[in-house]
Image 1: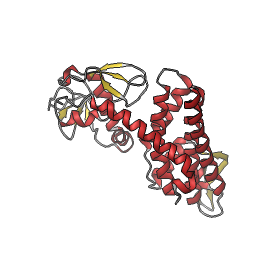
Image 2: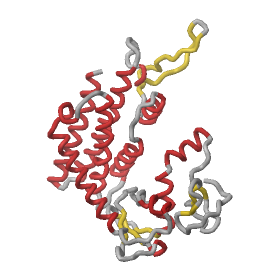
Image 3: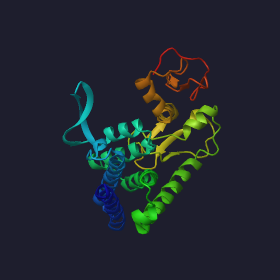
Image 4: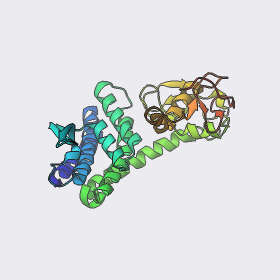
Length: 292
């Protein structure tokens, strides 16, 4: 089990070193490698936690793909060859075992990793900063689950880089948010959803209002600080509401829960919050008939 955890920590350290070298050299390939290695290290640490929780003598059964078998008339689970579980399997096992982890943050890291491997744009550096900022939160949680200390076990040098990067990203995010400081939101629902504004093209949350002096929600026009993509308030708010209630939407499909938002019968956008009974775009309080 210690070997798995060591491998995870080493992968994260290599990723952080790739990040430092990529910034120094202006090397986008290094920056992409940074996210790839850090993400891989996170998954290995997660497997380390599952291995640690596996019953003694099972060879870390919780990290393995399993299949049902019948033994003496009883249903049991047996290891399915040498296959180990991947991202989705890890997430499922963590949820089954009530292990808390910020999956929304980790999903964003995975998305950025995939985008950096398949697409290129001028905002690579900001994308990587965002990925490592989210990764810092997840890494800290995993180390706590493993009874490890970030400074002592990951190492003060590597942990300091993660914290400094998070500080840089947070400053960029705060600067983007300030462009909305004079805005008169149509209601509290809209203001709350605005915290989840994200780019349709690259998914970044570094969204800024093109005209910071504008104070009317209906006139909001934004651009992404990472890739430059622009958007109007309608589609922007739809994406934000969907992001804000991503987990609740997951439960709609898995547990049959009521949808957290619906299509507004006035503006036809999926921005009508069920509990608040108000639309984040037009302010209507009429519950639409079309569900998500």
